[in-house]
Length: 93
Image 1 (cartoon, rainbow, N blue to C red):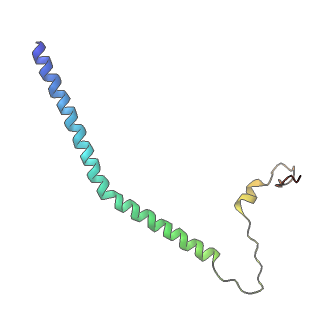
Image 2 (tube, rainbow, N blue to C red):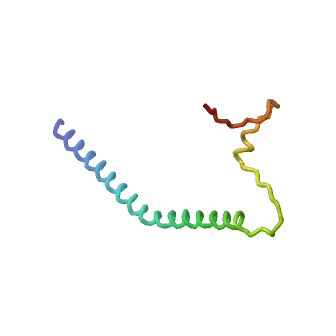
């Protein structure tokens, strides 16, 4: 009985190791197929964002036209409870 238990334990151990090896190589294979696609999509997305940025901020403006662009950080700093506006300062010695 004890000998049968050892043989079954070894069989289950080897089966588990085999499954782990199959999953490992399967994930490596799938990764090699999907990695270039994901990288290409990320690069394309970054290129689109860059071209949108260039279109938005690099357009030549007609001479004499004045535009005011609010910074997102400045809008977040304003206090909404009526206490006033936050101002950065440096202490001079």
